[in-house]
Image (cartoon, rainbow, N blue to C red; front, top):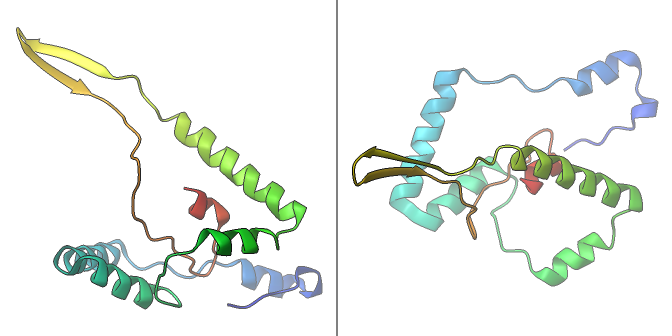
Length: 139
C-alpha cells in the first residue's frame, strides 16, 4: 500500500491516485464468486482462510479485545469522529430499509408472511483492496 501526501502532489499525480483500479467483466466476477462459494462449501473454514489469504495481504485471524483497545487508543479525535460519522451514516441507511412484516392469508387457513429480522452473528470477509473504507468494516 502506498501512502501519498496530498499537499505534495501536483494535479496530474492527484488525478492518478484518485483513479480506481479497472474492474473485471461481470462474467469474470460471477465465475470467481461461483468458484469461491464452491471452495467454501466443500472446504469450510479452512477454505475461507485460504481464499481470504489469497485475496488479502495475510491470513485472517481473530482479534483480541485487548488488541482492539490498544489500536483504538492510537486514533486521533478526528479519526474517532470520522468513524462515528461512518457508523451513523451506515446505520441510517440500513434502518431506512427495514420493512413492516407482511402477512397475507392467501386461502382460508393458508398464511404467508414476510419478516425482516436481525442476525445475532455472522461471518464475513472485509476487503481492503486499493481503497479500504471504514464504512465497509462498519457494515
